[in-house]
Length: 344
Ligand code: PMV
Image (tube, rainbow, N blue to C red; front, top):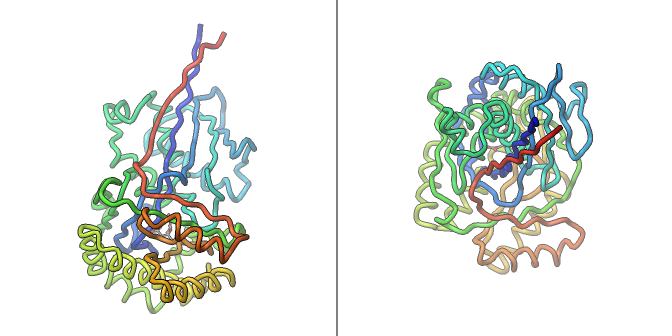
């Protein structure tokens, strides 16, 4: 009797509080600046992988087969090939993947997607049934994070729960990703306001390439070390208003770099601006303890302490009844499980 094993990874997305934008080395994905993110709990990618007897990889997204010619799938096939080459694994894989949230609209689907693809593929190739098994085979979280980073930079931060710091160094070996605080340190929430489900105007992988053409890029990179020190202190002391001011400034600054690059990139849509204007005024009027941040997309992440999340979400819903609003919170990081069945 033969058996067949499926390796399922569930990897969360993360929201960058200090963003990375621009790379020192695009090929090895070495960022120009440090970043700090909060790992989410319910915005996840679930990827199930199985070894197959075939000459090529098979990929299914939401039960639809994807082909290499499909622009959405290109990055996935390319990352699988990179992983196979880096690790010298020869077998082909069948991969089934789905997101718990709309992809390509400013929730980091590439972070959770490349994270889950990496974790489930390495588990299948190395026949690892748990994170502990992976560790015993030399695939520590640090190593998995480095591999995932090659598919999407921000994916490396999704391998730990809580608050995660990606420290950039001059070389591959100096890329350190580590947990700053576990999720139990401070119960924070992310209210994700989906003002648009349209795909990104430009994938972030291309946007990173033009960052250096902005005259705001160098001053931004130079100011990041002191901002990192400030946010670390705010996190340590659970000083919400300092945290909020820092994350809003950082997000606005990253988008200013994007808009002043050549070619200019604008992820904001009219709905984004309308929301941000309303939010600023509403916060001023009601002293609402919440701050906004946006990744490479038009949708808005409203960060608050979890004790205030439901009430703030309802205030947003009252004003914008037609927008989908996801309420997520700080999470614990990835999981891996397997199912084995006998086949005749
Ligand atoms: O993960 P990448 O390489 O696609 O870049 C994403 C960058 C931002 O999401 C805009 C910011 C960040 O640090 O996550």
